[in-house]
Image (cartoon, rainbow, N blue to C red; front, side):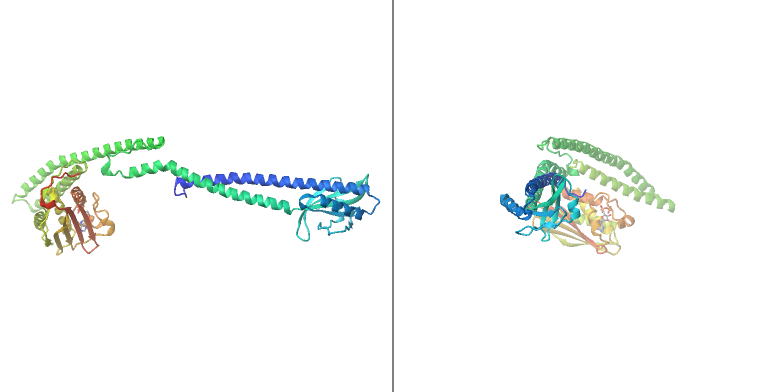
Length: 475
Ligand code: ADP
């Protein structure tokens, strides 16, 4: 559809319909008035022609030309509104009879044209040599069976044309005005009628995936919109149930998988303790142990996210020494990635209110990514800062970096960039967990990166006011 909105569509169609109806009506009025004026004129001409004919019959022997002149002057004086009637006489053979006074503007008719006139007078429109449009009536003057003369009477069509032009002008202005009024009125009416729909749209847009418990108001003042709201609400209800079911399933499945996975890993590790293991078996078992470890981490992350999303996770809010937590996390990651140098860039003592296990997980995930996506010999620099009422942790690496398109998606679940998908081990859940934990702690995270030039992750968390214990509850 070429219209940007229903409002403009309704306004346009109503305008077109009104203009169409008004135009048909206008054409009707115009032709009615035109016909009426022309038939009145023809009537006048007919009357005057018959007066002249009777006069000619009565004055058959006199000087016809002089008598007719007198008659014409009399006729002109009798005409109201200054409408001059022009007269032209012809002999029975078709020769024009000169009349005194102003020469007649009626173009001289040929004898062939005159002879074509029989019992009934002939009306025609002609233009004089001076460009005057004339309505002409030609009549044959008879006495018994004898043709005495031909008479032509004519009137200027200008006054009628002027009236018709004025009428046309008025009708066109009226049509345009009516169209504009109809358009504006329909637009306003449609706007008013569709307002509740706009309201319902903006209300519905406010409901996000994490907000499925919210419902639309039942009353929008319009019955149809009320029905729409209630169907939308029942759809939300079903959606919420489906989401809850899916979260519960993920949480349950992850929970059930955790125990057997731990046992598998434990058994493999025990088997690896055997010094007599053939090398090919040792390789396979080590491989298995690595894969089981990866699976176990994935399941733990899934469980954490599922619980977080279902709102089951009641994280503790205790004072956490963030600086100490950063040092611990660095030690832990250093042990797993000796090929990348990890160092501190700045160290402020900061305490935040939160759950130390979850915050440790955040730091581990970020540091793990930093070393994972930094080639051998690269560097990771960490800074802990106190800025106003915020604690800030910066983790900068000299690794592969990211494209702007990737940066927009890295906090989405299971997102892994094309490149990292092939090279490094991961699940795509680490940053989703980071994002959730930080948001739950009323903090924020930003990322700055360029392909090939490393990445900088910055985490902001609110400081404990006066470093006192805060008993907040994570929303
Ligand atoms: P993964 O398990 O794949 O590391 P994450 O959620 O932790 O999952 O990260 C998502 C994606 O973000 C990664 O696959 C990677 O493409 C990108 N990424 C995260 N951290 C970095 C980093 N420090 N340098 C480059 N890319 C990164």
